[in-house]
Amino acid sequence: MLSRLLALTFFAVLIAAAPAAAARPDGKVLRSAGLAVTWPLRTDPAVVPAGTKIQVRVRRLRSRDARTAALTFGRPGARPLASKRLRSGSFAFTVPSAASTTYELRLKVGARTWRGRISTPAEGVTVSTAALAPGTFTPPRATPPPEAPSSSTPPPASGDEAEEITNTKGCDRGASAAAALEVAAPSIGAGGSLRYTLTTTGGASLVVNALYGIDRLVDGAWTTVVAPGTEAERAYLVRPGKRFANAAAVPVGSSAGRYRVRVDATPVRTGASDEVVTVTAEFDVTG
Image (cartoon, rainbow, N blue to C red; front, side, top):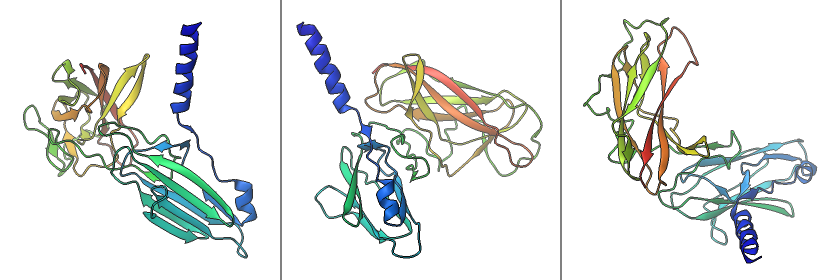
C-alpha cells in the first residue's frame, strides 16, 4: 500500500511539473473589441532559449471603434522591459540571456487582461522552440563554444579539403549527391568537443557550413539536444572525394547515452533546388 501511495505521489509531482497548455486570449472577447491577436505561447510556462525574438501580432477587424491592445513584457511585478499600445501591427521583444529566469507577457484590452509566462532554461541546458507557435519567433543565432570553429572562421585544417566558395566551375550539376560522416572518437565526455569529417561520396559537389545538430537516442527515438541553427556567415564547397572537417560541442551536463551528430549539405545544381543531403554519425556520451 505504501509503495503504491509513493508511486501515485511521484506521478502527481511529474504532472504538476510538466508545462500546461497556455491560456490563450479569448477570441470572442477580442472580436467584440474589434481585434484579432496571434498569441505566440503554446505552453505555460513557455520554456525557450535565451535570445529568442518573439512577436505578438494584432489585427484590426473593423475600421471604427476598435479597442487598443496594451502589451508588455518583463519580470512579474517589475518595470516592463518592452511595451506597446496598438490596434494593428506587431509587438516584438527579445528574451534576455539570463538563465533560469521567468518573465511575463501581458495583453490588456479594455477591462480584460491575459498573461503568459516565458522562462529560460538553466545554465548549460539546451531547449527547443516547441513551446512557441510557428511564425511568431526567430530563434537565437547559434554561438559555438571556443573549442569548436564558428561559422565566421574556416574549419580546422587537419583532414579538411573543403574550399571557400569563389566559383563552382567544374561541378557536375546533374550528378547524384551523397556523403558520409565520421566522428574522430567513439565516445566523449559531456562538455567535450568531438571532431567530425564529412566526405563527398557522390558525383555532385556539396555546399556545407559549420552548423550541426546533436540528437540523443531516447526509448528508441532520436530527440534533438542541439538544434543546428539557421544562419552561418561562411559556406564551403566540398568537391567529389573531398572532405570537410569541423567539431561539435556536447553540452555540459548531458546524460550518458547514445548520441549522433547531424549535418546538412546542399548539392550544387542548376537553378533553385530544395535538395538536401543529411548525414549522421553516432557516438556515446560517458557523462
